[in-house]
Length: 460
Image (cartoon, rainbow, N blue to C red; front, top):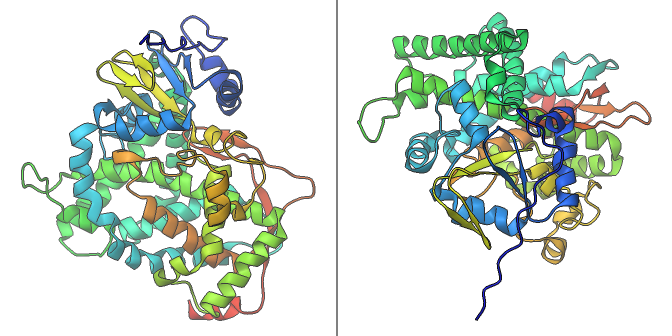
């Protein structure tokens, strides 16, 4: 029997010395990555870092193999390595057994009983945010959702211990850090060493965020009080190897990474969902009808989450069409077999959830927002296994997936019953990618609703 060699892996056009494909990525990273799906096969090589080979994995079976079958033997790759260098080691950036160990340490903070306790805090933060929006005025919805996401994080992690001035500084600095992390993934390492204003702003903002978190950790450690938040739980966590409590630096790194990775992603999904409601009144009405039926005028509670199937499908569809992940990386440690290809050690592997979820070969009419594509019958007929990966897969699947969905359902259910948004006629919003994919400027007008939502306002 003669074995047939796999075809050679093509190399994307347009690479230049010293910068590789950074020019295309900086100019239009989403467009460039999407073009690779159209122009090349299941694997295509690009250059992110001179001297390093990066393979974009585009086939769902190969992506799933990379994340699950091969996952335990791979390093986390450039994106997570840069996050670790810039923000500190955390469960998000760790690989192998270190990741497993850190995940076990943090898992209690994301367990069902803890998340159930957070719902009231999330709902309260959302109600306060809605009350601050001036009726009939134009609102930058993405910015409002970033602020809301950070507020929910502050209440669940810090038990509302940050004063207003500290919160505002944290919000501003985190935005600089998010943009900086995204740029540093695309650009060669030598660029961040240049004495540029961009680099100085990033370093100052990162250090300021770290200092804010360090102070909160130190103050709670000194007080010894139990605040019932995620920070208190982490302070009680011990290192399974040493039996000692986590250090203040370890806790700060975990929270800093959670703040950077969690606030912008949640905010973007919330903003896109409200955008789709403004574009399609039928989808919005179906969500409202479901909320009226299930909640009967009362505030949403944790027990209601599984009783809202249509809202669940809306969120699934938002995570498909508007996924926040544009470059998820891994790195081979030894020579690795990926499908029929033998990949050398030290090779970067990456895939783009945003492009994967919009591939017309995988999802019929992919640019149409259709929550009913997630009805069980349609799903069984149309979808390729492994084509939908909202939180990744395998041992490195997002540890905060249940926390994130709880935030999304709670916030949407609270906002939509109190406010409707109008989009200016003919306005469409395009996605832009920094560290995550998010809407470009999203300006909409907020209008108060009347009726059953007033009962919820009184109860809150």
